[in-house]
Amino acid sequence: MNFRNWQQYLKGNKLRLPNNSKLAVIFGLSAFCAGQKYFKHASFDVQRAEAEAKQPNMLPLAQTNQHDQLSHQKSHFTYGVSMLPHIEKRQRGGEDAYFADDQFMVVLDGVGGWNDQGVDPGLFSRQLVSLISLERHHNDQQTLKNILVEAVKKTTFKGSSTACLARINQNLGGAVLETTNLGDSGYALFRIKDERKETQDGIEPNPKIVLQFRSKEQQYSFNFPYQCGTNCDLPYNADDNSHILEENDILIMGSDGLFDNVYDEDLLNCIYPNFNKETKQITDHLAAAVCLSTKAEILGKDKKYFSPFAKHAKEQRKYFMGGKLDDVTVIVAQFHKSSHIQ
Image (cartoon, rainbow, N blue to C red):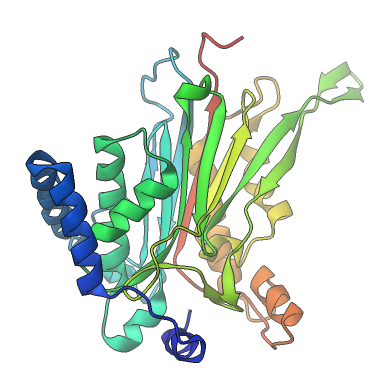
């Protein structure tokens, strides 16, 4: 997103948005009303998140829980994560950020236009993802939107970011996925349909992976996504959704570096090679995630490729040809029901 577009939008629409001092007042009052204990927690959280954000290698570029000993007493995700910063931003850790465990996942994309103002948006996104994680830890009964709002209030670095959050709601039987999405990061939810095919050896299982839901992008105008952070409204307009999950449902979350370069129907080209048709399970989540991030980067460099981003540009009567090289973050996750759910 171009920062000048943001300034022109504010001027043209005469919006009066919260500045840093107003956010500080909002945060100060909420902390005071919640009592001294919460204020100490909040102050420590901000300091901790600031320190973590300043570490370019704070987030591993690849991560998986597939080989961990996970409890089957509650529903959970197995997952793999691949984060591939833009080649020119790799040394400072890029501008994306993520969090993932077997219950809760987040993808953030720092708005690159802040570089024009001498601001590293990666500091903001990394601080925000730390604050989201801590906010959820202190009160996991909040809605995802409220977790995002409260975390944004506590940020101290300049910048802004899109955001996609997802979690399993164990209070609803452990089979409901809740999401909130702001801007052009997003997710795709897939379901496995039972099918069979005839072969020389008889009838064999041939399950198909089918798209169930794709999050919608939120944009003020082309390449100008909704975002949260400095000089932005608090993200109350994030799009909330919930989905009833079935065993082995597949969730792919990503920053726009993925979805601007890889069409939804092509996402599965990295899933099927890592999919066991007998068990209907992903055999290597990390390999699937790395495949997608690498594919997005390669396509992002292709100046002759009619990318999803180029397609959207054409729909807005703008000319753009090729991929859109960017930071890429991908989470590939598969849902497993609690052993208590029939």
